[in-house]
Length: 89
Image (cartoon, rainbow, N blue to C red; front, side, top):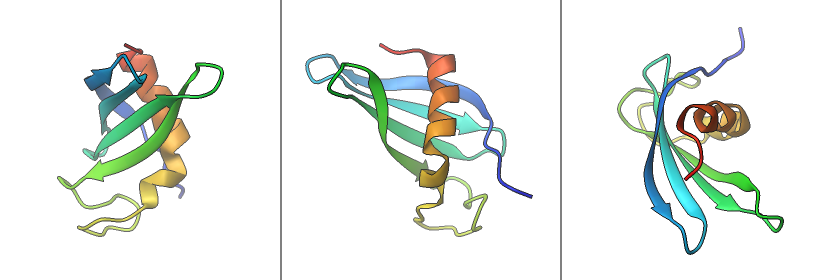
């Protein structure tokens, strides 16, 4: 069974209007909390640049209780759901 992230809550936690950078903290259905960092591309569209899993729960994919890069595979899917909930600043 493949991992299917589902965002249940998303909030904008920081915003820098000068550079166009902002952060969203998203909570997933499996209690995982992730921080998504967004920037602007050449055309001015919002693109996710980084995703970090906040260490409140073990990773739902590899079950590690420390830093891993498993969430980068699902960055686009989590990002689209989080932007839909929180919007852009």
